[in-house]
Each structure stands twice: as C-alpha cells, then as structure tokens.
Length: 608
Ligand code: G6P
Image (cartoon, rainbow, N blue to C red; front, side):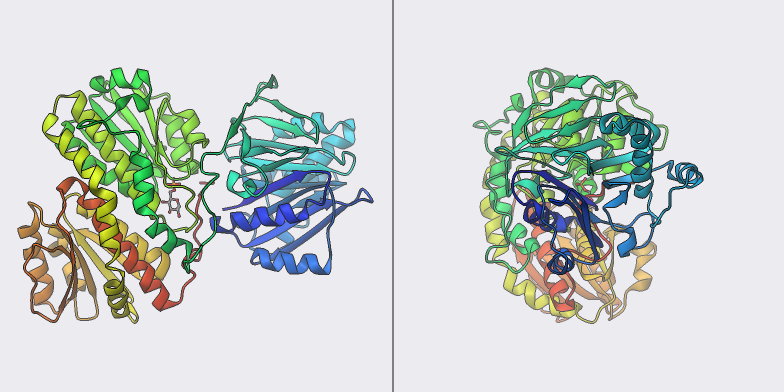
C-alpha cells in the first residue's frame, strides 16, 4: 500500500527519501514521486509510474537537491495508476502526500472548483492540497491552515506537507493510517513505516490517532485531536539490528522461510519456565484475569486469520474455552453478541491492517473483558490500543506472502493456549506444550532440508491452473494457508477443503489435471483422511501427500509423498506449514512470477 517518507536536514535529503521509498517497495505500489524545496526556495516535483527505479531515472534527468522534502509510493484507489495521479500533489506553493482515503472528497472538490481551483488528477488527495492552499490564502498561517484542513476532511489519512514559505518545516498528521517521526542527530524525518527510516535512525515518536505535528530541525511539536500540545516520547525500534537485505537468498520470501527457526526461538525466549509458561509477560493485570476468561473471540485478516483458525482447535481442546474466529472486515460491520467475560484477540503481523484495527476499536464498546493484540510490530497502532499484548519476534517481514510471521503467530497462540490451560489447571497439556515448543526450532531446521525434494515436486505444477488442498482438524486451516500461499505468488487458483467435505462438491473437479495436496500428519484423524484420499485416487487425481514418516509409503505412482518427522500433535500445524511455503515458492519460481511483490497485492493493507 502507499508509503510516505519526509525529511528536513542540513544536507541534501533526496538520497534519504529515495532509500526510504526503496525500503517501502515491499508494501506494493504502482507509482512514486518526490517533492523537494530547492535552494531557490521553489518546489521541484518529480513523479513516475512503475518502480522506484523509474523515479530514480526521472531524477537523473531532473535532479532535485534540497534540505526539505517529501516522497510517496502510491497504490491506486481514486484514479488509475498514472503520472498525473501520483503524489505529491501541489497547490500554490505547497506539496502534499497522503495515505488513506478522504471520504468527503467529492463535496470538497466541488466547493474548491467553485472557488476557482483547477484539478489535475482524479485523486482524493489533491483536494487536501487545494483546501490547505485555500485556508493558507486566508490566514498566511500554515499551522492554522493545516488545522483547519484537518477539521474539514473525513476519512483515513496519514498526511505530510511542505510549503515554500517555511524551508525548514514538515507538517504531518495521522488518522487511521500509521505515521512516525524519526529523530536523527540535527535532522528529523517522518514515514508511514519505521523500516523506511532505519537507514538514518532507530529512534521514533509514534503519533496517536488524530495527532498533528510541526517538525523542524530544532523542534518537534505535536498536538492531539483536541488541539492540546502533547509529548509523544521517543522509543527505540526493536528490530533495528535485523538485516533488511536478501543476503545470500534469491528472494526475501525464501530468506524469511529459512529464518523461521530463529524467529521462533526469539518468540519463545523468556516465555517458558521449566514445565510451565510465564504469564507475567502479558502484564500483571492479565495474569490474574486469565482465569476469568469464559469465552474468546479472535479477529484478523488474511494469513493472520488462518493462525486464529488453528488456535480455535487448541483453545477449545486444551483450555475448554469456547472460541470463535472471524475475518475483521465482516466482524466490524455486524452486531456481535459478546457473552460475559469474553476476551477479544486481534492477530496481525503489521498491527496496521485497517479492518483489524477498526475491529479492535469497534470491540472497545462491546463490553469485552479485555482486548489482546498478537502482533509483530511493537510500536504499531494495534499494540498501542489493545489492553494486553503478546509480541511475536519474527523481525521485519518484507515478502508480501507472510511466512515467518504466520508460524510465530502460531507459536504465540500455542503459548496463550498453554497459559489458559495452566490457569484452568489442565496440567496434562502444559508440560507437553512447553516441551514441544522448546524442540520446535530444531524440528523446523530438519523439515527445511526437504527443500530439494519439494523443488522437484514443484515442476508438476508448471502447467496447472487449479489445485485442491485438503486437511482435517488443525491441519484444515494449514491447508487453507497452503492454498492462499500458492494463489498469492504463483497465481494458480487453489482452494482448501476440510477433507470430509470433499464428496459434497469439490470431488466433481478431480481429474488427472488437478493436483490435490493433502496435509496428513499421523494424528487421530489420519484414517479418516486416508479414505478421503482414496476417493481422489479413484478419480485419477494427482495426489501430493505431506505425511508423517511413520505412515507406510505407497508404491502407487499417482501419489507423491513427502515425509515429515513425527511430532507432538500440538506443534504439527507449525511444522506442516513449512513444506507448503516451500512448495508455493518453488512453483512461483517455475511460473516466473514476482515472488516478493505479487501482482495486485500489498504487504500492509492500511485502507479498507
Ligand atoms: C495483507 C498481506 C497478508 C496478510 C494480511 C493481514 O493481505 O498481504 O500477507 O496476512 O494483509 O495483514 P496483518 O499485517 O494484519 O497480519
């Protein structure tokens, strides 16, 4: 999705802006632009459709050098991807970049046209530029004009503005879209994601909803939505030490798949006692209230939703607590019935997904016992707004298709299940989960050695257009995640079914052109799954079986089996995720798609 970078310094800031945009590329975008205030105190704007590299080329033709500037990567919402729609948008000596959607842009546009403003784009953002210019023309006071503009607009936004009359000042605001202020030595920056600024600083001020700020070389003033000046403390970015390069790997996705043992080690570090979990990490209030939880609602999007679906099986089976799971885009718009003492859990890699954040805010008025965010980004909006938090420590995830974020979410959810079981005296599960979690990173290392066999298998998908994924129990959501991965990055249409549903429809699709991937660990449902697989075989389906090594291999050439080591049931969903990630990665390689930045998708979906 869209990205914002801004900087004020005593040196040329264009390289900082460009590097910032490069670091935001992973989020998905279709055009990019930059506006810099030159030494002649004039705004110079350069924009280009396509990759940041295209913008760099355009900047070679028209060099932009200055000490103040803003830059943007756009993901089209209002108006097609085209240079005239790319940000920044200009009006009367000012430049604006914007993430989000201005919902009342249509009446504002009409009003501004009546006032004589000429629009050169179809974007909602250009309304902000002209509106701000209009207010400034009345008062000659930028801060007042910015405030008045914010009062006029409705919707979701992160905004950054510069004006020719103030060569050392950035203005910015956030409402529904993330924005941070970076503190350098003698210079300041802003960005929609701290990752853009780790090149220059690891110290950030996180703006709260409705905040607006005036940032210069020697000061940083922030006001809240009630126009009260507030102090937003500087915090250090936790993942600053993580490398943001691909290193020896061809793609970020592959690097992130192989980082999973370490990401899981980091996520469980400090959370496990001898044969129990350390619940104090949720905070003292949470520790005492775990025992009160009578119901759980889990809300999330995409891959994070699949993590929630696995957790429902665990929570109900081990802690005996009723649990329901829902996608955030549905939950936020319906009337929810919240039984007494219900915990709301939101799961998100980024902590900025618009629907998940809106769901959390909606939940706050629904009478929940408490809200808990499971998240990979410590300073994110979701983490700051939830009552309790459980951080995953996957490190920055750059590939659009989520991998290590998902498995660390599963680990956090298994930890939570264990804490709930512990609070309810279900000791039989506690020690077993703790042991299994301890051994998990090493098991994952073992499973990753299957890569060569999976690479070979991927060739079978080269000419396929459809695939089915089957699983049962906790492995049904894993099959869903496998299908999602395959469609996201290889563009092969893939669907997942609970294997027992096969004969209620999807079996009609099975023929020798349909690969059927089954997730078949050695658990209590294995025999049932085997019967379902027979149904596929009898119809000539091409079976690809990810099975436990304890299962007798078959000599049938229509079945290709990849064997995984035996593990405890509780961690099996984590382990079986890995070969499915590797499969989709290698199929995407065969297909020649853009693995890290698949078409039409964004890493962090910060608008509805
Ligand atoms: C986007 C990403 C997915 C992710 C989903 C939810 O669609 O491409 O990989 O699962 O958003 O993101 P979150 O950051 O809330 O986990």
